[in-house]
Amino acid sequence: MLAISQASAAPYAAMVVDARSGKVLHSRNADTRLHPASLTKMMTLYVAFEAITRGEISLDTVVTIPRKAAAEPPSKLGLRTGQKIKLRYLIRAASIKSANDAATAIGIAIAGSEAAFARRMNRTAKAMGMTRTHFKNAHGLTESGHLSTARDMTTLGRHVFYDYPDYYNLFSRRTADAGVRKVANTNTRFLNSYRGADGIKTGYTRAAGFNLVASAERGSERIITTVFGGRSTASRNAKVAELMNLGFRRAPSRVAVRKPQRPAYTPGGVAPGTAGKTIRLVTAVKKSLRPKMRPGPEEATPVTSTQLAALTEGIAEAVEEVARSENNLVRASISAPATAIAKPVLGGDIAPLSAVPPPPRPAAIVLAARPAKNAAPVPQEVVTRMSTSGGRHWGINVGILGSRYQAERLLLKTALKEIDTLDDALRKVVNRPKGWYANFVGMTQEQADLACRRLTARNSDCMVLGPS
Picture 1: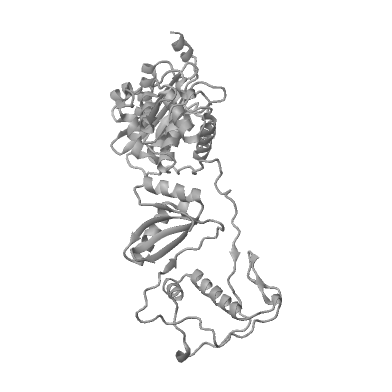
Picture 2: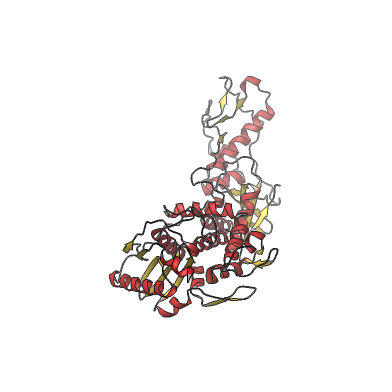
């Protein structure tokens, strides 16, 4: 009775939206900051789904339960300090039973500490537009400053539904195997009583009252309703059902679906657009001091494999490589004055230290030669994108293909799929006896490891390549 009497004094707030468009159909005290209780776990689980999708952790990762998690008060799964359990069971316990020990264990497994995980929760909330929410923990037990609003929790519920539909079914399960025992859904009464209900999350503390974010679908219509401050489970469910009915009456039968934009992926706390600036070292010759006449047909020299790749693929980087090779041959054969040597300039062209023009090319130098008729083929490397990051000697291999076209196509598809980790990498196709190797190079070890983890999580082949 004491818990109910204190809960009855909790402020009331509500929000009803058309999940398809995000249009608000009803609101009351929707921006009042209140205690969210276990509605917090929606964000804990959202971050967990994000970490799994991004390859930071997997469902089969074995988590060692820290003392902090084991000491959490009920509702809990009953985990012990040092106990080992797979992440998938912790997610089931947190989403279905609303287990506090499981939620804390998830946060620490992903971020290293509860405080670090709470910071990630807040960054994600801010990126979603949850402007009046601040998290202090992963479970939602009452803590000073741990507050949210009906509007913000409705926004979060909509993101859970649209951003991770493959995991959303968790919230409609009546029971589940949580590894150590079978658990029952805290939202079973509403799921069983309201037609079309399929989630999402309950919450209760003395300070918060009885909270619920619920979602239901009827035909082509989907409504999300949030209630803070219910007096009891029964009265809260009745109020949510009443607001759901209101929502279905007001929502149009047909409306364009406008999914919410996914929040920026910032696991380490780096804000979007603040990555370190890359200094580009440009060493290509852009001006010729002594242009030569174009050779006639009888004087044309054979084309090297690198030049051929540049012509067929239209890649300027290969042409620059040929130009540098020619200059190196000239400098190796001619003892030029020290004052005539050019030096690279960051962000600009090659700047000569002297205006003295280079001597003419000796007639004895041969730039290219036709390979012998029976000579073994020379391995070819086709560069399809230029990396501008110096000092990066790691890479990944994503496949060995039967043709250069297939390898380049795979590289392009993989780069588009994993643009976050591969955007700055150099795409390279290498012809070897076994086939055409599709490689990404010019990466740090950390970038290569992360890219491979994420590709593996997507069931794509990947192998890290160390410095050669």
